[in-house]
Image 1 (cartoon, helix red, strand yellow):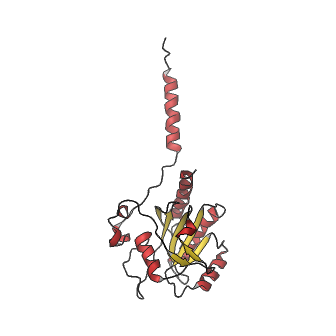
Image 2: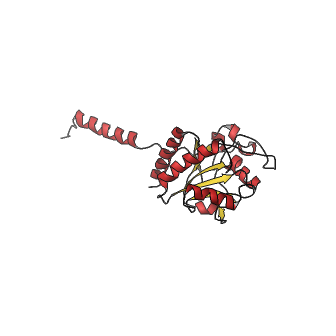
Image 3: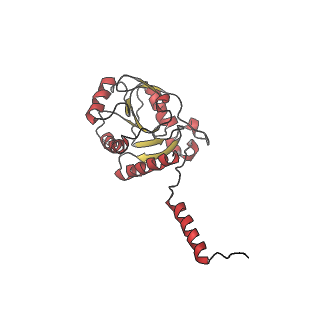
Length: 215
């Protein structure tokens, strides 16, 4: 004799399933160049639709150590572009990035990477002094300088953080408020206004969501 499951039990099961579906955070989008506002993407890579990754780079941090993409292997990191003497958006960005740093400073999976867009002026000693004033762990938050063209190519062709076009030459200049979230596979997972407390709150939540993906 077949047992008939009461309608109330069926309804309860449905509610429980729906609850868990709703309560689970939606996975973050993986961004490729074709998904992003063309104004932020260098023309040479605008048509790429799959498998965009952060490629190789070689820069120098505030401790005069060489930093490559390998430093961030199996790490989640947040990156931006700034310069030490910036009187406008950069102080706001630093304040907001410091909020994120404080939230995750004890998490071994989360790192920070800030590129100067004025690498000649922002030498290693200048970056060192800047980082020390912020009282941050130099192994956790990297402030990097290096070849200007390489840094500008990273902004425009890798992280898609800058609207302006240019060749990284002497007269080229990037000024952008964007923060970019990068996952352990070196994929881009989010873009945020680093001058906006509300948008950086979204970044913090997205980092927690991304951490859940790796559990």
